[in-house]
Length: 328
Image (cartoon, rainbow, N blue to C red):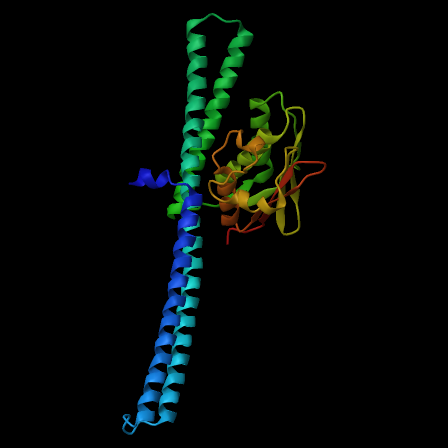
């Protein structure tokens, strides 16, 4: 049954929903017309009985008054039912669309994560088998080992993202914050990616000795996600800039790329779980839609803010604002 519903197009579901809603409103209108018509018939019948003298103590004023009260009652009940029907329809429509969209995002995530898991495993296995079976020059051996290590690092990051996201969503994640050297942690992330991608230019402006009270491990994950994201979308010949600024009450960390950029209406959506931009240039790149969502959750857990703005002349700048905290 689930497989059948998965194959039903979303557009068809919309058509059926609105058709049923129109039918319900039409039935409500028909119900009001019939009741009003019946009320008019009852008034005419009672007026006829009064004219013939068969109404007993019932007067014409009472009959008209009852007719008017019934008419107002039908209008009031009809409008109340119509309002509740429309409000309920809007609520159900929004909830169902969110669930369907979330279900589709989950399906896309499963497809993406399956590919993301298989690719590094396959590349690493192939490189190691090549090293095992063939006597290669030292330069080629180093290249294969570097590629295998890069894929292993990417697999490790993916697993960390999935596990940490699941823990946070389930409410089982326990925060353990302490004072650490933020300058050193950010520098280590930049150095790691510079080593993994020696052909890419990663410029850094990171003053030394800037400390922060928080979780170094998960914040390193945020730094890695943003730098990897920048590498993923920036052309190979363009630089990526990572900077750290010690402001009066907060730290400002910026990762600037020169990729295709993000349209203004989607600048908030990119932080939603499983969300990936619909631009074909971006959808063809690797990713699961978890990195920015998880990064945003981690920054929020540090009472900070993760946002994105346009870079000039093109690309994006991701801004991390981390308010300074104390152990107290």
